[in-house]
Length: 386
Image (cartoon, rainbow, N blue to C red):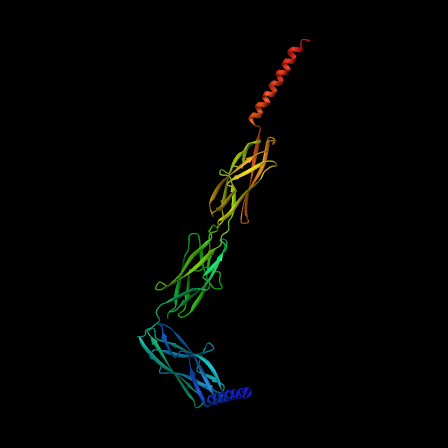
């Protein structure tokens, strides 16, 4: 059963193909065609209408072309391969493309204008009527769209958008381009496949043009979405589209003292407070900022607070580091390294601490010296006479 069904289907297909071919062979003669036999004419426009001359089953021959019933004041000519022609040579079952050029007078009354194109061969004739409407033009309209309206990247990145501008009217226009962007954002326009910056683009009637919009955020832009509105304006009509820049932020830490002083005094065994400032110079919050120190051996450093929950972009937070030199520390200069870390970001600060002798130990020393002098005086007074 399956073989019979397949054979039957093939038989029907072959029969249909044969019938179509027979019907195609049944028509013999010349024919003229164009995609749009009825068109709208714009003021002071030279119109070029593409035509096709068909030879259906006739011997090869020269086909003469004529424009008949041309409106008064109009000029009609045929163009082939960029030059004026009066005839074409067409092989059997072949076709030839030509262009009918129409030059109407500079001033036209509103209405409909008709003419006829005639093809004359060896005993064959084909006609094609054309109708041109003047005065009824498409209303002015622009279209503007972005292929990818939302892009994401860091504040240091450059964002490039591809936009398409459509002229949906019946007239050529010059379109002015502008953008509404947040403060600090730079917006430039360049035609497709060009690096030259522009502020306007010419667009022919019924056509479209592609161009690029390049957006550069400020380097200190915080993380988040930013809205860019691009507008195309001809003075009569306008179109707008919205672009979005998604800035992905990143924290950046800095560590300093309030007055930028990087040194201080301390006494052995006595706690000394040092005020530090943790600053986030990045574009995203610094979360979970931990503080640490690398002091000399047997020194102690404590922080208040020990950890910062978050430091917003562009803000500063003060912390206090209490440094206690070793009780056995000698007088002199020592280096203490402070460090702040968060989410892979870090900052450090070297602070020089000068350890000085305690006043109490100075008094003890003076007392010891005085006691020694007293003992020496006593000994000399008592035993010196002997």
